[in-house]
Image (cartoon, rainbow, N blue to C red; front, side, top):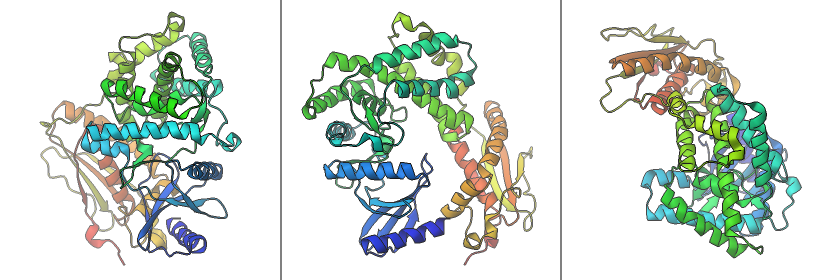
Length: 483
C-alpha cells in the first residue's frame, strides 16, 4: 500500500503543482487512521495526507480553504486527488506546542505561545464562521444538547461501565440531561474546533502558531475549545497558568466578536464545559486503552483522573446533580486511582528485561543464561508474513512500510493485545518482588519482519507503561535479506 500511495503522491505533485518530489517519507502514525507523508521537492517541503474516509477529507479541505481565504493560521491546500483520498498541504514543521512544553517546561516563552494560540483561536472562532457553510461539517452542524449528551454517554459506556460501579442509571441520565440543557443555553456560538489541544497546535520555524486537525469542527460554544486546551491531561498546566490564560482568551474573544460577552455567564458555562471535556477524554482513553488495549492510552488514564480530581477540588456540582456527584467522587477515589496506577520501575529497580527476535530456521530458541531462566517465547508465524511480498523482502520490521502493513493488513495488533496481557502480569509481579531478570522472545520464519516488529512494540509498551528500559536484540540481523 505504501509504495502505491507514494507513487500517487508523486504523480499528484507533478500534475497539479508541476514540481517533482525527490523524497516521500511516511510520518509517525497518530491516533487517527489517516497516514501522513513529508514530501521533499527541491528546496520546499509539503505534507501529503492519505485517508480512506472521503467525507472527513472533504471537510478538512473545505474548512482549510475557507479559513485560508481569511488569513487564519491553517495550512494551505495545494492539490487534491480526483478520488479525494490524497491531498497535499502546507508543511508547518515537526514541532507541536506540546513538544515545546515537554522539552522546555513551563517557561515564559511557552506561556506566550499559549497566549498566542488562544488569541488566534478566538480569531478563528469568530472570523472563521463568517460565510461558513456548516452543512459541510463532518458529523453535525452544531455542538448542541445531543452532542453534549453523546460525550457524556461515551464516558458512561467506555469508562464508567468498565469500572462496574453500581449506580442508578435513570438518575444519572437525568443529571446528564439537566447539565446538557444548561450548557446548550449558550447564545454566543462560533466555529468550534472540537479537539483544540496542544498536539494540534504547531509551532512554525518563525515562531508563529498554526492549527491542524480541525475537520471535526462545527458551530458551538467557545468555552469547549478553551477547556480542551487548558485542561489537557498530558500538558498538566498549573492552576496559576489557567487563571492567567482564561482572562487573556476572554479579552481576545471580546476584541474579535461583535456580540457582547458577559464574563459571569461565560465562566459559569466554561466550568460545565470543562467537566464535559474531562469526561469525554476519559471515555476516549477508556475506549483506546481498556477496550483496544493501547498502552499509551492506558498510561494516560491516571493523568486524566488526576485532572478530574484537580477540577473537583473544593467544588461540587449543585445538589440536584446527586447521582453525577456520587459517580465523580467514585472516579477520583483512592480505590479507583489504585486500579489504574501501574507499578513503575524506580531508579533502584533491579529488573532487567531482555527482548529478542529470532528465526526458527536459523537460530532456534534463544538460550537464557540468567540464574533462574524462564520467561516467554512467542511464535509469530500465525501472522501473515510481509516477507512474502516483493516490496518488503529486503526490508525489516524496523521499516515504517512494514510496520504499516502489519498494523493494517494482519492480526498483529490483536496478537499483541494478548501478549501484553500475559507479560504485564509477570512484570508487575517481578517489580513488586524486586526480581532481577525477565526474558521475552519472539520468533518467526526469518527473524526479520514479524518477530522484529513484535519485539520493538513490546519494548515500547514496557517503556510507556512501566518505565522500564528493555534491552532489545534482533538475533538474526546478520542474515536479513537486503538489497
